[in-house]
Length: 67
Length: 274
Image (cartoon, rainbow over the protein chains, first blue to last red):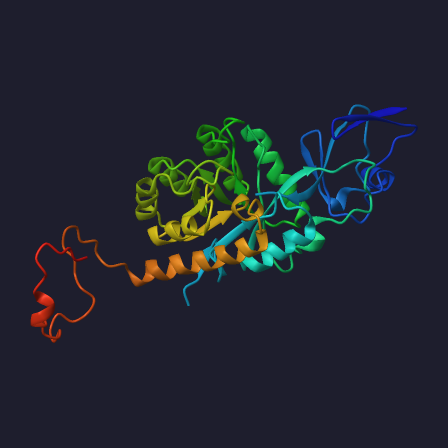
């Protein structure tokens, strides 16, 4: 069991997952998003390689209206 | 052609618009189209996890293929938050490096914290971002931002979202006179005449959001702003006449005015004429 902090909210996962699997789990596949892991950008090309570990803090962002 | 050039890229419109505060994406799109803007600002925010998975995305409505998107750091109060936000924006927009930096100092006034802004600009420029920077209207700070390598300086005309108009045209004038990079008024425009005044001062462009989005009819105001910016720019290029205090100058010829009729000149005694 691992716990990830995603956009400030803790979520538990049964088994270790990578970033691409997390995106599928969050139903964000194919969406225009960007991800930061513990303060570092995760390039899209590395989504399948980066394994997430217990305690990781993730920011998942989109573009919204703003001035 | 009289074009706006920012970081080597040419734009025909000198009006930049934000995309916040509209009632829906249809209104956002209609207002942006009516404004004629080619550069539009967007904010970067956490996605709603597990909610509204099917909801439309702003970038579907205003695609990067059609517009130059200018991600901002609205809501950031530290240089760290601002820098992280723009790194995420660059990843989100496939390496797009033109950004709007703003580091706020106070939630009540949204006045920029220039100490943090200068530090953030330095980091971002080292990381090859092209930084358009929101700044106070301090001419010395504006020059420092230019010297650091910012691609445009964007002084406030008055507080963000206040609609108070151009409160210190004299400082804007000094900033414009000193600058070799584009100067854009960012924040404070309330109505079309404000945008025109900014352009008449010699600003290279105007960035606005609330003046359009909070109008009773945003799409109509967007159209008005387009014309106001164009009118102000043309007036600036045309070069206004000198102001003459106490020295009226008739527009019509002073020669050849018909003779004064004798009768009309004789006023009845005690009569008043206007």
